[in-house]
Every structure is written in C-alpha cells, then in structure tokens.
Length: 165
Image (cartoon, rainbow, N blue to C red; front, top):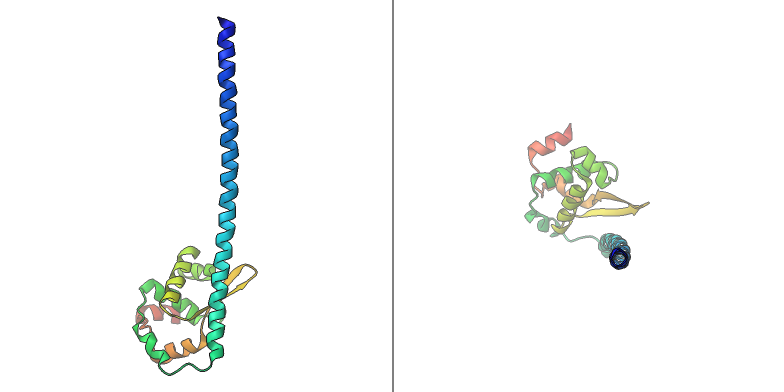
C-alpha cells in the first residue's frame, strides 16, 4: 500500500511539474510580447512626433500665413493648468523638456505631456524636437508674437504675474 501511495504521489508531482513548465513558458511568452508591444508604442510615439515636426516645417514652407490665422486662435480656451504649462514654454528663452516644465510647475512629466497634447489638439503651435531620445518643446515664434499683441489665449492675469517674477 505504501509503495502504491508513493507511486501515485510521484505521478501527481510529475503532472504538476509539467503544468508548471507550461505556465513558465507562457509567462515568458507573455513578457516577450509585452516588451515587443512597448517597443512598438515607443516607435509610434516617435513617428507621431516626427509627423508633427514635418507638419510644422511644411506649414512654414508654404509661405506667410494669412491674416485670418490670428482669428482662428480666438476661440481657444485653456484651463488654468494648461495656461501655466503654456506660460512656462512661452516665457522660456530655451527649449524645455516635459521634465523641465514639470519641475518648474510641481507636476509630473506625464501630466505635463498630457497638457501639451491637449494644447496641440486645440491648435496651439508647439514645436517638438527629439534630441538624444528627449523631447524638447518650444512655442512657435510667430504665435508668440500674436499672443503678445492680442492675448488670443486670454491668459489669466494672476497666472501671468507669477511668471513675470
């Protein structure tokens, strides 16, 4: 009886080992697929950034923008946080990374990236340049001029006073 019990347990252990090996193989395959998807997402992000850059370059090559260009900016409304992110870029003499803006405003880089994406979707011309796997941001000089003259984004005076200091 003792021998048959040991044989049964040995058989069960053998089956469990086979299942464990299968689980480990599946886990490795899932990890490899996850890494592959992450690399693809990175490449897609880089392609989107390059498309944005090419769009900005293309629009500047077309020639001088018509006077109506400033009119289309009149309907843009920014939240207070978006205004802060915009002013961080607008008042900077240099290109900034998401991290630079986040540090300046006490936000996370991911949150800053979302705000920039929303501003781009609203039509604010923010140029993105990739150097050494870092994204550098600037506000289009022509738009800076329009904003300085007309305050088309209606930036809150309270927020702009903080950035003037």
